[in-house]
Image (cartoon, rainbow, N blue to C red; front, side, top):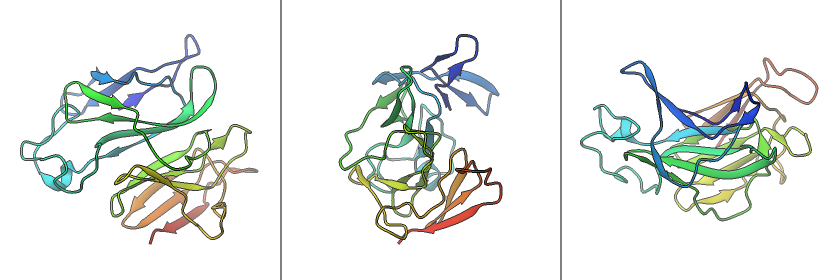
Length: 212
């Protein structure tokens, strides 16, 4: 799925969405209803779903596996593509969350109500899903004051609350501040690699966060 970005011809920020059909090898515009997709660039996204745990059959954006029952693995309200932050068409940094709910045709775009203090508005953050805890993780990025950040904020998908975990001290800033990096989850650990730091390219900078 590709959503948003900047049109290089007009230098305007877009809100369209396309997905690539890997079986037919072609691009297709996403059909959706609900909230209008946001105009965004430099945002981040992650897929949250349990189709692969419920079925070995084929599935896609518009249809789940034949033997899949929503909520059969864990009662998470919305399965789909979660999108966070980025810059809008007014050049403001944002910190809202949108969800493209899959398994329907058309898909449903939702802006969920989330309790608790959200991450600061930012661009170029990274996002991943840790299914052992049913958390979406937001890490790093560039804030409105142009400072890089290394904090972690967690979205609890069981109750849609923001959580600020302690990663060494109370402000959660013990990790290296970075953006344009890579993160990935394996088991109960978050791996953070590379990117741009305050003073240099962090080509071999590697950190691991274990959730308990």
